[in-house]
Length: 223
Ligand SMILES: C[S@@+](CC[C@H](N)C(=O)[O-])C[C@H]1O[C@@H](n2cnc3c(N)ncnc32)[C@H](O)[C@@H]1O
Image: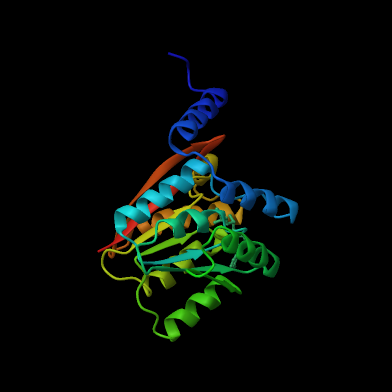
């Protein structure tokens, strides 16, 4: 057996992608447009998109909240898994990202079920809470890592027992192993992992995600 190295990890990722994650025009165009508009290529990978899709299907999600839209790539995967009659709200700080996402979602035939809200995520979350939004079945956190613990606290106010809360990039190639990482994003991810590990309302695990380097997806269910 070959020793684990970056090249082998990439081949395994591609192998899984070719078998289980065939791309389609809407996903290809999504990334092409995001790139043409100058958005950073920090979307989830195709395999991770498929994982999000499957988790939403398993949960039978009818109401999904996403924090961090970018060009709407993960939004497309999530929204495609919605149960009939379902809806998704996605929160994005940057007007330009939101515009690209809206175009992409429209083209993917998801414009009617997805609402892109522009503004700092903590403010949008507080507004949802203030207006008494119905609890969400699933929440995907994928914005600025320094804000993750605050997003978790606010997400819990928008949850019910059984709500799934996911958070991306919580291993950060191992940088979270440092007790006090110098970078705020790494500190934010580490604080998030500690918060979900000890939270009395959550049962959680971090799933390592191997893609070029090792990262992780935090998976929690609300008790
Ligand atoms: C990693 S990208 C999201 C990727 C997307 N979920 C995907 O996989 O296709 C993070 C996004 O969060 C947005 N963001 C960063 N800080 C934010 C904040 N405080 N409030 C709302 N959005 C924020 C960024 O502008 C960026 O578009």
